[in-house]
Length: 103
Image (cartoon, rainbow, N blue to C red; front, side):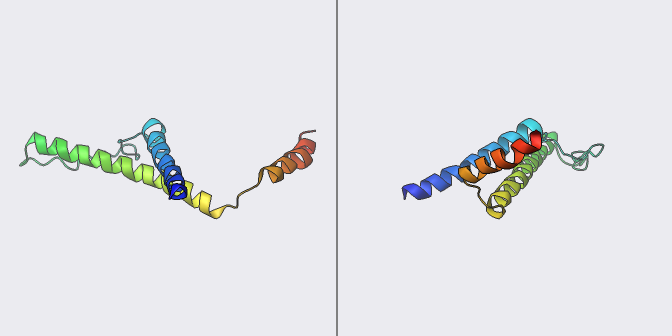
């Protein structure tokens, strides 16, 4: 059971870090395509302004979640696809290949 919590905490860390990256670096709740206002599409005259604000807030939350899930998908697929490298293999690569490449 403790080992399951370890993996759960690892994936929760990925989710929280992808949310932080989305909010800080990818624009957060703003739409990524420039010169295209998504919120003007939802300007209906027969609805009150309160409903328009709620719809724009919901769209902003959905945009943030889609961006973070895309980043999470890329992170998880990278983790599942690429093989893990042991530390001794990484040190051998650094000292035997990259060191001579630098010289």
